[in-house]
Length: 324
Image (cartoon, rainbow, N blue to C red; front, side, top):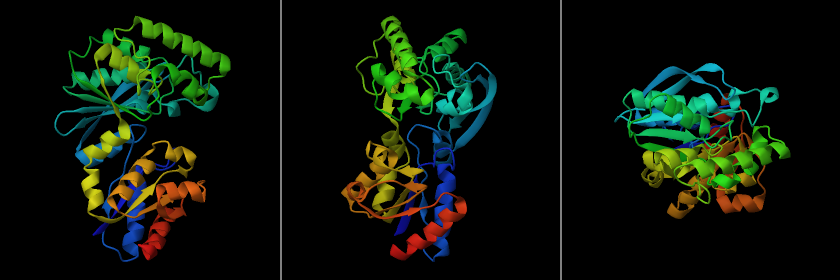
């Protein structure tokens, strides 16, 4: 039985495939069999690379609009089987805007709509939208305008992977400050979302998941009948994760910072919960461990090691092998 290595990305530092490969090298260096590498994502940043690596396909590059209206190169994926994959962070991501430029009210989701349109026009059906890491809180207004102005998507099915369960009406207050909004701007964003909800074909208010990506998920649901799914569970199912977990002697999870927010349904929490239910021991290698012993018991982690570089991840994998 092999060790299953299933980390999330270390946000802003290391992509999930890089983390998994480094830990895997450490385990092998310690004499363990080659592990089952299963890098993960929850619908946020890194989803494109994780799903393309696991399911096969190719990357297409086009020009799209960044949150402040500038033309940038942006990727979308064509998965084996015909589905398209658009990651909101590619064009509309917060990482596209340096901190001093952030303007939560001006930031638009238009670039994501352009990528959805490009994937649909390339023949993709469905188009999967990974809705995390957004700089905008426009309810998807920019994306909807781009799709309409580009001629529409002719009934192509949309599937939105949401990295949060937040409903539409809470999107501004919950995530606006992360995008540079002060209290007055948060109120402006809330009023704008209220007005948009009243104009959309369906009312997204009061529905879980519609607040993902600053309401983009709700806008696509309301205007294009998009299916909304919790991203972590959808991706785990697509990767055949439960079967791989049952076949493992242990699972190694990872993320940039292990803290109380981990317990709010993040990938590490989801994986550890499934592992505990199945009876597979869980271990973690993280960039920073900020979890107290009580919360660690909730995750039932047998060991937690810190590592922030690929070299340190390899050493941590090698050290972890001693207790596996």
